[in-house]
Amino acid sequence: MANYFPNKGFGLVEAMIAIGILGLIISLFMQSNAIQNFTMKNDRVTEKTGEVCNLIFNKFNEEFESQQDYFGLPRIVSTNLENNSILVENFKQLPYSGDIIKIFQNENEWTVVNSNTNPIILEENLDTEFAPGSKLQIIKSRFQPIDDLRILDLDENGFGDSIDLNLSNDQINALDIEEKIKLLWINIKTIAINLIGEASNDNLRFIKVICDEDDEGKCENNNRKIYCEIGNQSNLQRYIQIIR
Image (cartoon, rainbow, N blue to C red; front, side, top):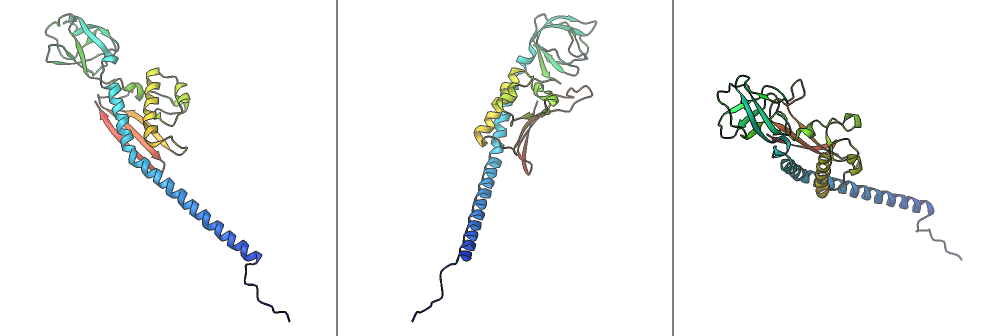
């Protein structure tokens, strides 16, 4: 007589259900790992952001700590006591109204009245003539070399007036700006890449230079703020440095 035993193995339906559950577990595990890796990457970027911004600030200071390359090595040609003005030479960029200048071997500081014109008219009364050839120093200026970055005015290119570190080198080189700015742009972009890697689509990496502007768009004083912003929409780290 034949003996019948119940089938204790998995049927097709049970097997498919088991495979589906196993697939779901694997999927959840992989998503968990992906989220963990993404979180770890974001944490690493957050930790490194301060270091990135400090290195960028140092780079800006190296580039703009000296105004000599911008203003040149001005010297006095002659003094006009009647007009309260001095004629100068060797200026690459003449000072603006409100700038403060100093004459070599003279303790006084002089405020410039006119903008970007020569002779330079001074606010304070001149009571003595300066020796021809005397060196002139800009000690406070409403226009600093770093303002070349503050007034980039790239709106027509769709990039605004910030230095976007997400742009490719080809995009930067295609901009209608000075070569020295392109080089600085690429250099500070490389600083960020070396520390936190290439930017992804959701990354925000911007550098912006601002000041308190008057109605003419010129800075009211010699203070400049550099904003360094790195992160994404949900976690944007911002660092600020003031330079004078």
